[in-house]
Length: 96
Image 1 (cartoon, rainbow, N blue to C red):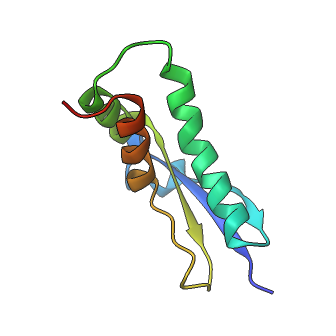
Image 2: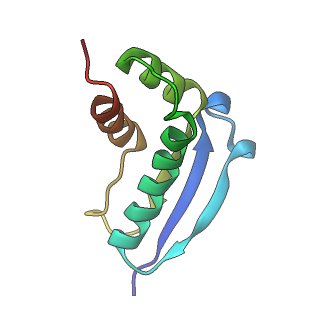
């Protein structure tokens, strides 16, 4: 059975593996991608009360958000936190 391990990097400390943590191991790609989406969604939940432009949201996420990713031998299981975050930014504050 394949295992899906989710790790989380910190965009503020990009490239510093000492800041990385293991979120957990999951049995399916669906479970692991849901866990990754939750991490990104939590970032936007923290700031939802304030009005932000798309650019402000995107810059804030890429500087201070968490960047979850999946490690697995399943080559079909892909998740890009930055792509998902950009989608969320567009939903919250459409580009002008």
